[in-house]
Length: 268
Image (tube, helix red, strand yellow):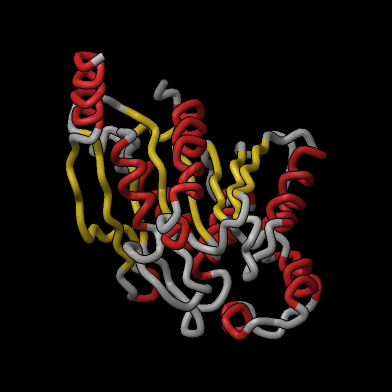
């Protein structure tokens, strides 16, 4: 048994061996420099990769905020990742942030050989407002990705408005005074279709900011048109993966997400 544990430890260390890249500019829309960080295994193998998109209510945060648990979980699993900055409201309202994510996908694809990344196997992964944004970027058809992972994302803005019984200040900055047509245009659920990228939706059942039914309705809509969708609901979990770190019972998202990514990207 001891020998087996040592072997597992050696394997984990090997998987976690890689190179960090910091503050690489991937786009400059309107003169605004957008940068990314990355972690890439150093064994020279070509793999699929994940592009991470932070939340922050469309108005706050950067490539290192709110999503720290993602970095360690993916690194320990040997999954290459890129984490990006994007323009935020109110200075840059919709669709600036979505366009920045699309630009990041194009940049990673064009630099795939340099980073030992398979350009056909890129997955977008976002949380909260970032979950909303990656849903739009993955589904509206400007770029093509291999998969989509959304943690407690807002997928149907009209439904969210009804669920909240108000139009929150932050979304009003990102999408000022929208009519129903504008809400549909800015909602990922509008773009579900057969043949779209497979989706994994992860949501806490005690989330009061973004009710878990957002993920349920989105997943059901995808399945209805024949698209692939899996959902993981976490009992009693609030909003935010950083909050989930405080209780071991909420860590169940880690093996689920890693296994889903490894299967999709062919890392198994």
